[in-house]
Image (cartoon, rainbow, N blue to C red; front, side, top):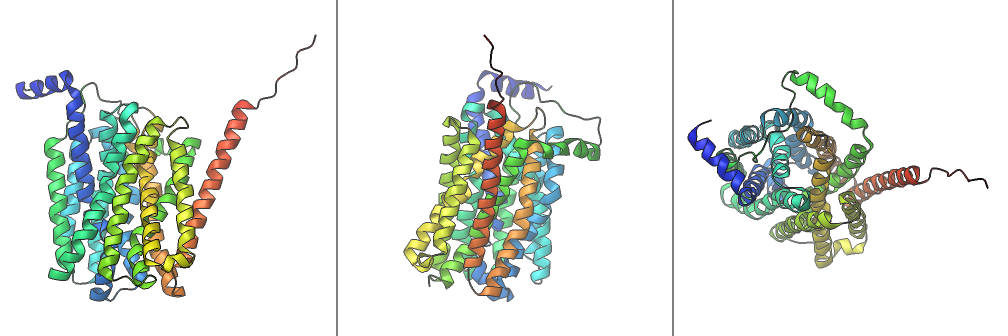
Length: 425
């Protein structure tokens, strides 16, 4: 150990508390920077459809393209994070996001843009679980929910900023300039994380360096059979479907159904993303103090989401002010669920496998993230209405909620309902 490294480690041991907030800050910024461009695709919907002659389904496929590689990449990233740590795995991944967006700005058309977004997804595979693991390792259970909520707020925060900035960039300089902007932001995030992140003081968790990557993947996939992980994945897939739907369709719904201009509708999406930022922090902080646990907070979000989607199916979905308010409600709960959810994942994970547990849960979410946007877009294209899309999302959430609550009730009856043998005499 060099003298400089020893001094830095000694300082961290003597006073670790302030630096955990630095870690939280850089993890949040890197999350926001890496998801900046993809989070702004919904706000660019009108411009992209006009410039590239896209259908709504093709627009949704752009979002899906960025989420395809993480389907497997999150699992690989989880193993790498547990084995090598967060600093370089996350930093290199964020750098890949930036470089892919820079190359995407040279795309000759829609197919080339899809290819660039596939590479973006591969790089982003490390950022989401890696940032979560870095924060979880620095904060104990009493503050982990709040810290995780702040960190997870980076995604809607980046999307909110992108929704405000990218339409202006597209209008002034064209759609290619939006990718250049996303490239620069992602590279700043990558450099900041690699330059500033340090592991917390103390021994590292257990790793399995002797096993090859494929063997580690096979050994850890047994988590899929754990009841706690099944509940986590059911809630995650339903709520992330709503999140995708709101992100892709808000501007189009308000533009067509509520007769708002493209710029006004994009500003509503900014407010929706901002509500998501507040929701992720507030709901995660609530989960730190909830006597019913973090998963109960996630269930509350599922109920609130169903209420909001039901309102969009009524005539108020065409009233500009009311519809905008409903979308903000969906932003708070339909984006805010992620803070307590990801904190619950980290606390459910076996020792030494936090990175893989995060990667596994998030990779299952990817199934919904990949399929839902184009399916919702296709429903809108075929029916000429947004109602079938909102109905589908509501049904998915109700089904997941019913299965999850039913399993929870059966589990509690099993734990407390064993028959007592009456005593004689």
